[in-house]
Amino acid sequence: MLLPLLSTLLLWSLADAAVSPDAKAVCSTLIAKYPKNLVWDTIGPNAGDTITQAAAYNSALFDYWNAASADNRPACAFFPSNAEQVSFAVRTLNAYPSVKYALKSGGHNPNLGYSSVKQGVLIAFRPNSQYAIPAPDGKTVEVGAGCKWEDVYEVLEPLGRTAVGGRLGDVGVTGFMLGGGLSYLSAQYGFGCDNVVEFECVLANGTIVTASRDSHPDLFFALRGGGNQYAIVTKMILKTYEIGDHGSIWGGVRTYGADQHSKILSAIARFTANNTDPKAAIIPNFNYFAAVGVNLPGALVFFFYDGTKVPPGVFDDFNSILSLSDTTKVKKYTVLTQEVLGGDMKGMRFQIRENTFPNMPEKDMTAFLNDHYKKMLKGSSERALQDLLDFRLMSFAVQPMPRGIVKASRDTGGPNALSMEPEQGDRVWVEYDVAWLSPLCDQRCPKSFETLVQSVHDLHVENYSGIPPTNYKEGDVDFISYNPIFMNDAMHGQDVLRSYGNATYDRLKATHEAYDPEGFFAERQGGFKFSS
Image 1 (tube, rainbow, N blue to C red):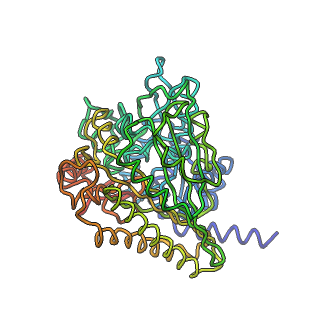
Image 2 (image 1 turned 135 degrees about the horizontal axis):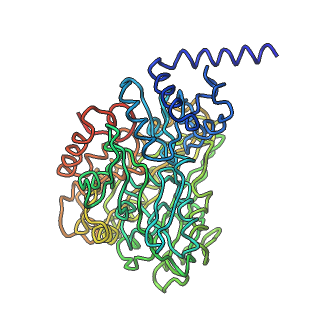
Image 3 (image 1 turned 180 degrees about the vertical axis):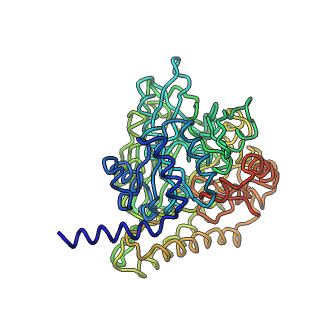
């Protein structure tokens, strides 16, 4: 009995030593005002004061896609129910400018410190702001900042409607919207952010405002793809749409052997350039599983069609490729978004990164994608041999970004922060993921991964630069070939905001300076920043 007690006292003393007096003061002020909404660190010296709510703290601490985020233990977690409570938290934090904080919606962003904080204040919107309420006519839905897409889809499915949201149910709504948001429905209705009617926000001084086309339009523009440097979003009103046959669509996942990769890559190039049916979407993934030095490649492709019958010609190139397994059939849309665990692969440590490439004419694009595949295979195999005792998963997803999505974005929502134009032609957004189990690789794995992903970007620059994308009409080919960087898939250190172009960067920075003059958002939380 004595040893466990001594161990607990040691943990408490270490936690207490790490927490600053100002952080304690913020937490103490919040719990005095809202005693049911704050929980102290469960191994900290004040843990006993909120012991009955310890499960809430632990859930907020461990419910991250990247397990390494749980190493950032906040001094306390605050669970607001509304904008007024967030406003009080902001005003309290302003009184103690040394205290760091983080905002957590779904916790899907794997970049450390973007939704986690060590010995600061974690403002966690789940579960108290986890609600989705359809309007009486069903044409919009009010969504709290604590929702994941599975929460939204669940309430809309009985209405035969959905929102333009994440393709995996475990993804948080707020971060998805702030980064732009790519959806199965994007070719019909644009990006997720194009379908926000309004944001309820708390500003850096604690003021509560509504950002929409008519109210604070500069803020409304910035929040649609420009990140978290302007305001704290507490709820959103989103457009909804009828989907399929009262919620039933055609879709699923096909898996393929490594020997089919070249055929799949050719089919992707043709689909991106030639598909004219906005109801169709794909997510092709190429995976490399490594254990005990053995690297096993494979592929899987998510298919979606907004209807129960796929017209001839839409997926014909893919239908001719032999698959190992196939779950495509008519099903509810929510079922599709839960396939492959709905993106919930918790327990592993993750890093992501993004490259943008032009979708070149088929011969060039197929050659590049095959060169790209081989370089990723070689790099993942070499890395598998570097650590025989760890399990690794490396993958890349070639996400078509045809001009049809950009046109739908412009037609639905008007300009957003991503600043793309359909006349610039077709692109692909390639998302790269690496996952590992051992904390011993927390430094080496992300650095090695970054080097590999940068090398395939350099491969394109060296061998394929200057080739205009398919359906290109105008624009600086050198710039649009590699931009914008898709924020939702970007790695810390990537200059996302600059990738939107100088004019948009200057516009966003001016908005940031107007709404965050003291650096409350820029200096005290994570996120993609402006250059000094």
